[in-house]
Structures are given as C-alpha cells and as structure tokens.
Image (cartoon, rainbow, N blue to C red; front, side, top):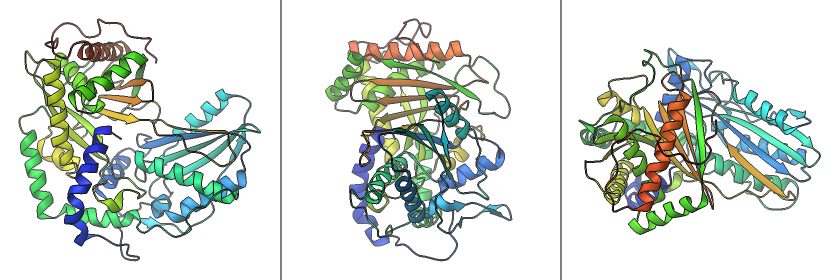
Length: 469
C-alpha cells in the first residue's frame, strides 16, 4: 500500500467518520450479495482471459522452528470459516457475475517434502502459475512444504478478487494468533467478525449510483481533463492491438546512505518519502515524453470508513495522479508539486478508476500505462514456539499489468526498487536504462533540491548498483 495513501486515508477517515456514522451498514445475512467495483474489474479481466494468472497474489510464509502442523491446519480452517470472501465463488448468471459463498469446511493443506531451497522456489512458482476458475473454486489455495524438521514454508496463492495488501497483513497476524491459540500459547477471539466483505460490497453498490459519486467523478474527470491520460511513453516495439500482459522486471537495492537521505529530504520538505520518490519518477517520465504533464497511477487502500479498517477483502482502487514538471523547476518545486497532486488525487480515492477511464481514456484495454507503488515492509509476525517467520508477497511471474510499474519497498535501512515492464513494448536494456535514470534523478534531488532539475539528455547515463534480472 502506498505510504502517502495511508496518511491521507487516516486524515480522511477522521474527517468523514462523523458524516457517515448515520449511514453505517451493519451485517445482514441473506439476500443477493453484489460484487464490489474492485471485484467487478477483476472478474471482467478474468473472463477476457480465463487462463490468465495476472491477478494471482502469490505469498510464502517461511517458518523456522518446531512447527505443529495440526495447529497450523486448524488456524487456516479458522480463517476460512471466519471470512466469507475466502470461500466465495463468482458464477455468472445471464452474463452477470454473482457471489456464491461455500459452506465452511476444513482447509485443504497438501504437504510436500523437498531436499533444497531451489525446490521450494520451484513449487512456489508452480503454484503461482495456476489460474483460478472464479466461477467454481474459492480464491485461495495452500501448500505446506517441509525443507527440514524445523524449516517449513506455507505457500498461499490468493486471487486478487478476495484480498489486497492490507488484507494479507491482517490474515497473517490473525493466523499467528490462532496458531498460538491451538498450541495453547495465547488467546484469540472466537466471536465472528462484526462485518463481512459483503457489507462493504452492498455499500459500494449503493454509492455507485448516488448523486455524490456522480458529482465526485465529474469533478475528478474535470481535474484530469487535458492531461495525458493515458501517458504515451515511447516504446521499443509497436503497441499491439490487444495486450498479452507478458512482463519481466529489473531491480536494484539502493545503498543505505541514499535511502536515509531520501527520508531526510522528505522530512525537510514536510512530505512523505512517497512524494520524493514520485517526484523523481515524474522527472524521469517528463524527460522521456518531452512534455510537462505526466499521469501516474498509484494504488489507494480504499478503506475510508473506520468500520472497514480491519475487514478482509479487496478494497484497493487505482488513483491517477497528474504531476506537472515545468521547464526550469527546482527539485523542491517538483517535490512540492508531486505531494500536492497526490494529496488532491487521494482525497478522491473513492472515485472508481474505471469510471474515470470511461470518461477520459482513449484506450479501454489498458487506460493506465505507468504505475507507482510505495510500500513499507511490515513488522514480522510471531508464531508461538517458532524462532522466525518471514512473509514474502510477490507478483505473478512473467506478467505486467501496465506498460511500466515501479515498486519501491522500504525496509528499516534500505530501499529496493523494482521496475516491471511489458515485454511486448520494452527490451530489458531499455528497462535497465529507465531504472538507471530513476536512480540518477533521485540522487540529484537528494544532492541539491534547490538546483534546477535536468530535463534533457539520454536516460540511464549514470550507473547505479548492480541491476538484477
């Protein structure tokens, strides 16, 4: 989740909580359950390409120590029983998707023994490559791999229709608590959740036809009118009529000094690190397209009411952010402009991306070309009796949702950058050059934010640390 999105959302929750209290949707059992707007987007894309793994969400939880497999299985069963969205299928009726919740049942947890970490990696990738049949199977599958008596990996593959980044954090924490309960080392709530995702989906369906939503969408579209939406970046190959979403990625981990300086520059300008990183990306894109206006999508949490904060499901919405980098801009001016543009956009994060795309975009299959995501690594989750647990969330291998996606992941002492690119549009060399250029623009902002940013010259002339395939 974008860090700035979290900060903006916190402010917005406080601002809107009182106004929405009288419209709070309480849990209601029975009656048809609609799909949320986010779910409809994903369902539609899966119908276009039923064998696609584009919306798979692969995770692995490495568990070190004497694991009690029966307790882990019981904890997974608890999670499935508690959250309807993890047991839901999405059959179509007359071409319209519907929600069918399966009865609670013990979790299916096949187990495999392997001899090497390479085999663990192979199994994780193989699981990630299996598409979900949304109309007939639930959106999660598990596999437990034993490398040694005290080394296990829980491979969990989700379909995005049921989860987002915050949901994965919530589920992992609750899995740890419930594992502790089953080994007799800690309490865990046995009461059912106060609300299910269906409550949000109903609220979302009601909001979709409201006058307030129509007004907000029109205002947001007016703000973006005249902006390059989508942004036409130069490509190595002609754009195919229908994208296949085949991708690859290059990555680099910034040295600790630069990572620390980025955070310091953010504090100096009283913005988040997200704004500094977005500003550097805006400069790179400005250099590439040769025009002052660029539009970048960033994922927003979409949990704008307090009662949705701890709810399991998919709330995420892609928010287009229009950043302007005029000729003669200093680094400080670009940072301030990026922060302001992101704040304005995230204030309207409840406006569905597809509504804006219908009004503004010239391309309907891929109305967004460049995406930026900033994530802060979550604190590790402790499992009773285990020495260590490490959760890794990856993306489906060999895919690209957008032309270019820049992922920045911050840890306590480092910053990892990964540029995912559409392999039908860009070569590995071009992607590497773009990542080099991004690192160089970021270093220039940090070195002297009062200097005029360099908007000319070839991309990628400065060599950073080793770039990974």
